[in-house]
Image (cartoon, rainbow, N blue to C red):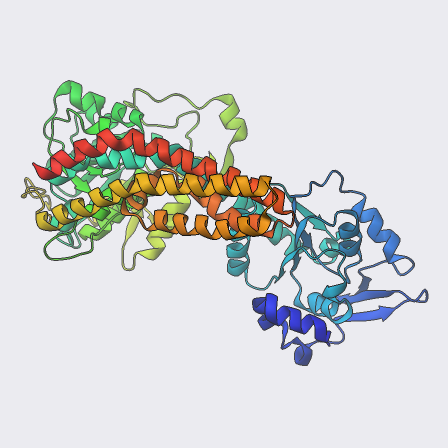
Length: 615
């Protein structure tokens, strides 16, 4: 039975873990895990697995065994966050904490019965360190993934996993699952941070500079939502397999058998073969995105409507000769603040994604198209090709890229080489397809990566089965620009102007609070410093609620802001008051300096945007 002290600690500090194991007393299999006392008087755990008895600790000297485990870990810094994977009866945990008492640590036990045995024999009060941050029992994979995600968000410094070696030998599947999950979450987090860091300022600057275009062009979702119910659409990507389908696409276009949407670079391949899609979609926030449409601009092609995401690289829109239509993206906090229609307070948006194909899939689903037919959607290399012909800025896959590639299943069940970027795009598309009920998606990409949720069918067969009559209407996108609520827009501008004026005072108050904290801690007046932390928190809350900060500045610094927020628990847990104060001043000062620079930088862009609203 769990020790009374441990029950009280679990209930007060780790209630989720208590909820998971409190009923194990009545459901324990006494033949599965037993606590045994050895001839030497030590306790060990006996595990009966697959008809064999295995012991989790030495029957002779578990303390010396634990010290040998800990000797494998050297130069552990004070601010390292440690995850103890596998508890056993905790000998190695005690040994590690005696050697490194200042680390913050977490106990993770994937086997509930083992954790139950640990808590029934070891008092948490007797642990050599009081820095136990959490106890986690591994039952539900999704829940553990969420937990590890939050753990990594809060602990961006050194993380050390300390394993009980025999545990992973007895339970190899659980260990493998944990390690794969941990590595995947770290990789995903790094990828997300990299994307956010790379684009966080561009998303907002683009949205501000593009606001004029948003006000002067139709919102394709508002104007055409659901209008193309059960009409076939072809989503043409620039994968190498597109080369094989040019004649089929030409025929479909000439006969008007399906609406053709080019995504990203595919516009160049189609133009190269004198095919004009019914629309070209684009959303990339980078300056380089303008290259995609350079040929359209050079040739002065007016017959290809562009559907752009509102946070697109603003250079792409400059000088585009054809009609333009917009869709509001989830990264565009500007339009989401200023705009609503007279009919609805809520704007339909498209969620940002790693690929324009995924964004366009959302758009086509919203407009009602079905089936959606994927062409050239390789999500993989073809030999050394990464793009179809006509994409003049593309290059062949290098030997190093081939070496670093990963193998995935293709549409025929064979292996095909891809990279992490393509693979992330494919995974995202699969998630969206799964989330769109009653949407039929047909993948015609010969030799491309298999996309779950789609049916593979060669394009010729699709044409015979689905594309038998003309469906495309002339000027199918034609319509007036969207009538956003101008009175609401002007009232939001008035609110924003007030918020902008307030930013200067908030920044001043923020610096003032930091200056006072620094003076107090240098004078070792730590009690007064604690009171000033409350004042700093109050100013930070005002910043978080200020419309100008919320709409422009915080999204432009989302990575640094998230790091700051996630570090607060760690900062508050610091026991040394001088160290705590210096770290708080340093962290918060760095953040407000970034914000202040961006306030100054976007002032002329904001004034320019205001003119578009007023006039």
